[in-house]
Length: 95
Image (tube, rainbow, N blue to C red; front, side, top):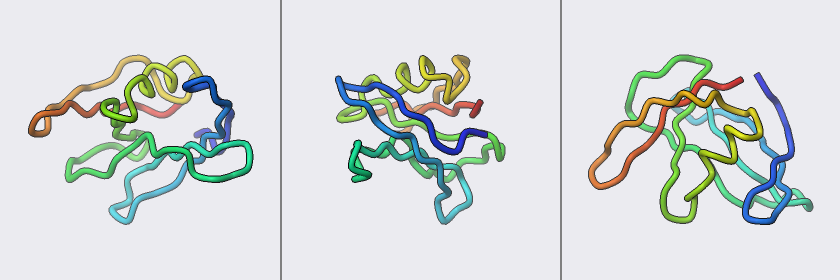
């Protein structure tokens, strides 16, 4: 699993930092060149996922992050969408 990698998103070079949520699911945070949090690409959700998977938020301020993570080869391109109220989240396998 990838520990840290730099990707380009919204004309910014960002470092991908992997972590874990309290529920044990994987998290992906993006940090700017000074190490400050820029955005969190993932969410923790009450859904069973594998240890090598992550749930991606690709709406609102995160729009386009799914594609950026696929292009940077952080996650596999085949994702599983699931609807939560009025939005769609994506389960993705980490590379």
